[in-house]
Structures are given as C-alpha cells and as structure tokens.
Length: 328
Image (cartoon, rainbow, N blue to C red; front, side, top):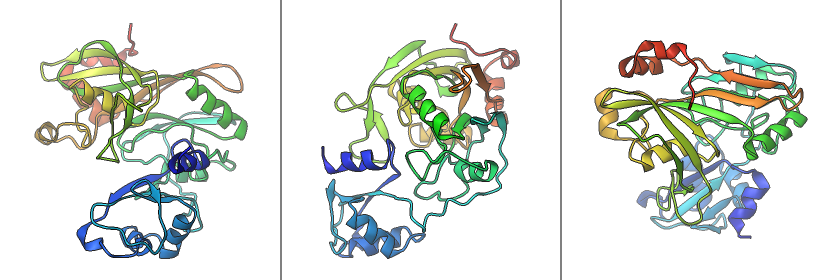
C-alpha cells in the first residue's frame, strides 16, 4: 500500500483533496508558507501540522515543511478537520422532500455545496443540516456528518442524509451495493444514442481536479442513457447511473460526444457561451430505495427547477413535465 492509499483509507473513501501546481512566483518558498499564502483562511501552523502528519504530498511523495518546491511541482493537500475548520450550524433554508427520525431527503438547489471542502468551508448542506437536526450521525469523515452521497455544487435534485449512526451505516452499504435506484435528467448537446455506457473512470492524468474515462486503473462506471426529447440541437435525457463515481454522468456524456449543456469543466465553452447557460443542466430527479430501518419502499422526486424547465419547454411538448420519467 502506498502513502496516498493509506491517507485515503485513514480519512474516508473520498477525502477532501485539492491539487495545485507551483507557479514561478512561488518557487523557492517553503512549502508551508506557500500553502498558507494560497489558502489565506488557514494558518501556516495548520499546514505544518498537515505536512508533519503526511497529508501533503509533493509529486506523490511525503514532504517536509522546510522544503522549497520548484516550478511545475504538483502538490496534493488532504484537508483535515481542526479547530480552524469550524463546522458551525447555519440557518440555511432546506427544501425538504422527506423526513423522519432516521433520515432526511431534500431537493438541493444548484449552487449549494454538499459538505465543507477547499474553497467552501461554510454555507454548505452540512452547515444547514447541523442547524436543522439536533443530533446527527458523525459518519466516517468528521467533515461530512450525516452525508452518505454527494451531488456536485451546480447539480440540483434529490439528496439524502442520515440522522443516526445506524442509518448512516446502512445507507452507505446500500449505495455501495447498488440498492439505490437513481434517475437524473440532463440537457445534452446533440442527440446521444439510447445505450448503456460502461467505461471506467479515474482521475485525469494531467488535469488533476478532473475525472476522465481511463482504460487502466479506472473504477467501474455504468450509466444507462435514454433520450426523452430532441429539437435537432439539444436533447432532454434520462440517465440511470448504476455506479456512483465522481462526476460520472458528466464524464460519460462527454466521452460519447454529448456533454451536459452548461458544464464548464466537461462541456463546450463555445456552446455554453452562445446559449448563455449559467450552470450545468443536470438534475437528480428521483431516488428509489427501501428505508434502511422501517423497510418501507421510498420514492423521492425532486421538482424540476425553473432554469431546467425553460429548456424542457424549448426541447419538447410541455406535457412531458406531467408524466413520471422512465426508461421504459
């Protein structure tokens, strides 16, 4: 097991990582000072502690705080919960779809970050959840109490969280064993085929904050694609992901040449600009599962936001909004 694998196992399945390249103006500086300058919300002492505990890697190797990196060196930071990262409750309104004493399901708006991460240490769903719930399951990662899955910042839709440790454990197992039936809606460029995409996904070899389809060392990723409507330029697409890889739907749709409209990372900058789209048009529409405690079937549907509805009206007959979306 290499050092990075040890870090990932120690922290969580998806640690709070950030990647950066050393700029010419930063060459020759001690790495702890450079990181403190890059992340002004944290002290130099904070980064010294991360370095000492092995949570900062330079070109995939542990580093000492006195080391001065060179131009082009890659630094990987695995942020840890300390008093400097304050998980404070915040009175942020939540659009609640379902709630009982075990779990809560909300319709997450586009723009809300799910949990604290580099650049977004407050104003997240976790902060709202801490204010809404008196007691919350801590989970494996102290930065993500109650969180059992994620949605990207600019993806809207169904998001659930656990209130108790027992529920958290069972929901994590259910996601891992593919017992959660997820359905997404997307506005895509062009018209993709009705197909099942089975293409492994891993971190991009050079753009480290991005994911990509990789033939070697990628994790299994499967997405079912079904076109609901097409207007000769854009499609309304239903996607049912069978796995839950980071950015899976966005990466898979880019891979087949039909990226999500408005996606600034995996989409077409030219088309996005021409259509004046402000965010990626991806919506977690429905989540079906068996309640982990009561064993009652649960179906959570997140109402479609107005910016997404606008595109549905342009692509199809508006009556499509009155029907459940299905692959059948």
